[in-house]
Picture 1 (cartoon, helix red, strand yellow):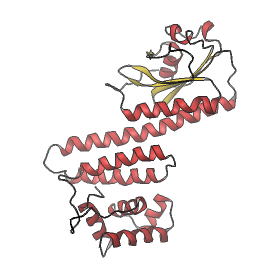
Picture 2 (cartoon, one colour):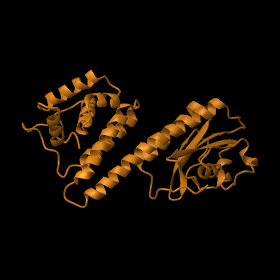
Picture 3 (cartoon, one colour):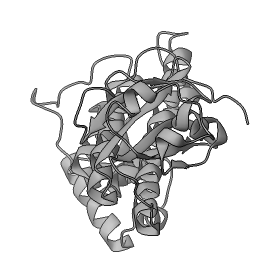
Picture 4 (cartoon, rainbow, N blue to C red):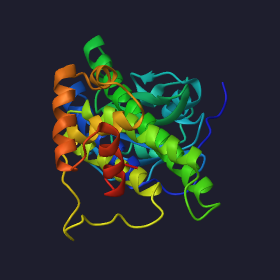
Length: 294
């Protein structure tokens, strides 16, 4: 068991939102009345979101790796349960002031696992001793798993953005290898976004897509030849063009986006018409010139 590596600096707004969404769902889906959680950074888990608390005792709670119930879950990479928190002898009691001050009796801690490492902890609590059944536990695990998946997307996009920006900064224009990596990341993210049903999460992913697209340009996107705005493509038309830009066939794009091949062809033809392009490759070039694709 090793101490997880923590990020440094303050939490990003997107990370705070991920924690808040997960914590808000815990009381609804597990029936535990109290929930709280946080992400690991600066060497500890900083609780950034609380739901259902009767007091303010949990506000500002900072949990060190190995300390308390959550700290144990963090370094052991597995859930920890204290049916009677006050009398538990398997944990340290560094945070009794906050936990017992809130009146919590049963406490359940689930680590947020990303790439085999704990990135944070989600807690479920009740004010009386409460057995944790399979349904309650599985619901908590599902929420933790959903948050882990979103963090993986967040981390990968941020890594690629940072890597691309660093290398691009070495010259006035983005190097070809970096531009191709950005385009690949963009197409991959478009495919992920297309499968996301949650409108808020999809909106955040689309914002990251725009950041990736902007990194490959050395100057602002030009306007159309008539002096107006660039052509407006639908999200699916952009998805298809992003695949074309990587050299994928209509069949490959259809499989990636879970569409029929004839549907992909229809989106491509519509996009070509809007971009005044006679071929698929000309459409990609026009989309890049208009700032639609990276």
